[in-house]
Length: 348
Image (cartoon, rainbow, N blue to C red; front, side):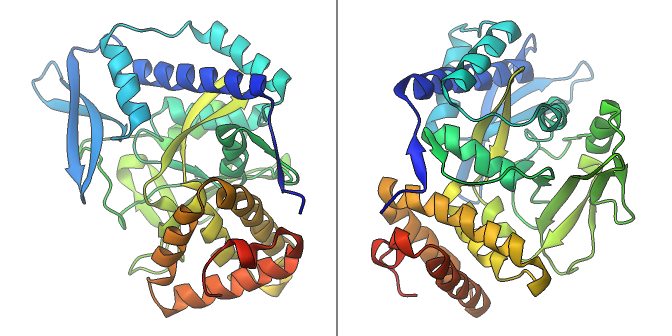
């Protein structure tokens, strides 16, 4: 059985590890540099989240969201308190180029410009996430592997929990997402629904903003605090729960983002493959291919986590179980050599 991934060299893994820490430290410093305040936590739905809290000149309390209470965030906060500083933007650029030379996987420069600009405007700190193919690319460097296949698409998919999920964000958080896109002056134009931005001179370079479906169904949801309109999708909430931090590479540096948990991303892709109409068979097969690559790695790294996530998904109702089971059956047909039926101890 040939795996669907190959390990990156030890040098590549070490280079990315150092760059990842430097990228996230830089992002933390960008949130808190020269601000008179301190770190605080908030518990929402049983999870603890970190903020940088300060008072404005008018006396109002303002908070900057940093992330969930996990070891990487705690380490960065400890380093910040100890006065640690990254080497600067030029040093990070050199580190990124070295990581790419060693074999780490970058994203196209134009994509990086868009993602980085949204990051500068606070989209990810406000609970936004990068989903779709760019998250799939990010998992490679995070795991220290390179996928055997996995073509890069030109579209960019962003998501936010919107009104449907409880997220730990301060009520006074404001992010001008639309202004961020306009400031790029790259020619993106919103379509009628305002949830997709198209680039007339590059028809395949779309930017989509997504969220999970609520009582309003597929009606686009405008979020004033983000100055953006989101397109609700069925089952999207599964990928949006408990996001994780990641770093994306370009030849000009690195970008701190939030992406779905890989085990959730994989199972969500299996479900999505069953929502595609027959005319989108090629995209459904791409969904299954991304899921297969992730499962091939995850079943070696932490099979119990995959089983637990599967149980979470099928326990959400009949429709969830039906879509996931049918999607998994299709994945088994498409990737018979990976022996998923034996390696994944679940009832399909």
